[in-house]
Length: 126
Image (cartoon, rainbow, N blue to C red; front, side, top):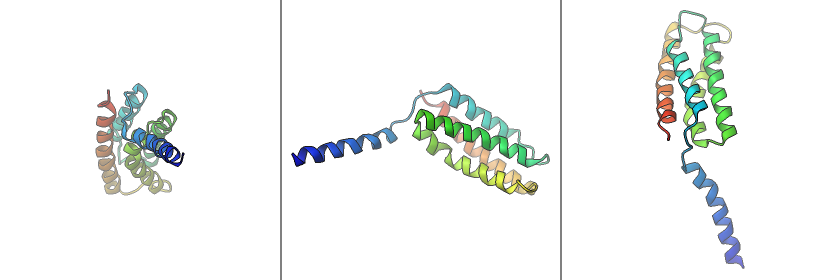
């Protein structure tokens, strides 16, 4: 009886970890939103007020996160986490006043790299 109970516990806990290893399938909404984020990053103008631009980027990343949570796409949550942190730092830094142009360009470059990688992963699913 103890063997059966232990086996059931191992099997049940193993199923949740297996789900983390299986990638999610294609999702049109996620594909569109990640391309929207890439476009916003590409169009970021460091000479214009930065906070509204940073908030828009962060808002779309947050939308992607909430949607992925709702769909239980854990792999997508892990994928966008670095980009979300970068965007959040940018929003926080520009809340009171614009950051330097150099800081903005560095954040833009980081977000561009991160969004390219995320888009490649999101659009590469089947």
